[in-house]
Length: 142
Image (cartoon, rainbow, N blue to C red; front, side, top):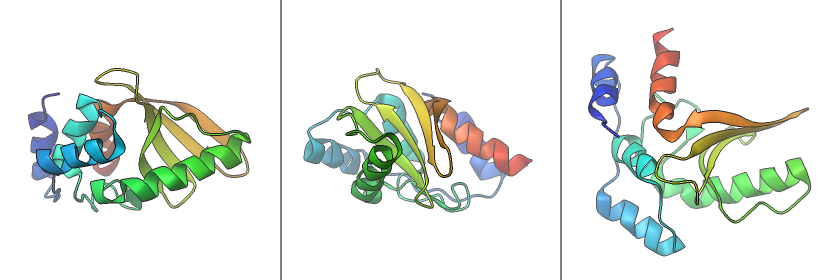
């Protein structure tokens, strides 16, 4: 994924993002015994350490992946009354009721799903991982 267009947009809006290092991303992969998709690693390289203005109310940081995945799995299981599949990996949590996830075995730019658990349950295709930054930038431009 070419990050330059997204970084240019973020910078032109005066937003601050702090990316994760390749080493910290590799450490997380090794800790979990998984290989993260390239598009998600690229996303982390842009804002894996913080992007509060761009992701206001969302938890996305690399250091919070344990929390995001534990909370996401609990919510998935409460929403569907079944064990969360082991290939699901949560990357974003919003106020404890909304999550974005992908399937670890879906390639280098997997589909991204939105799970919302409230009075009704929504579990729908959101787009591709490399769409997430553009989506958030678009919301701020409105």
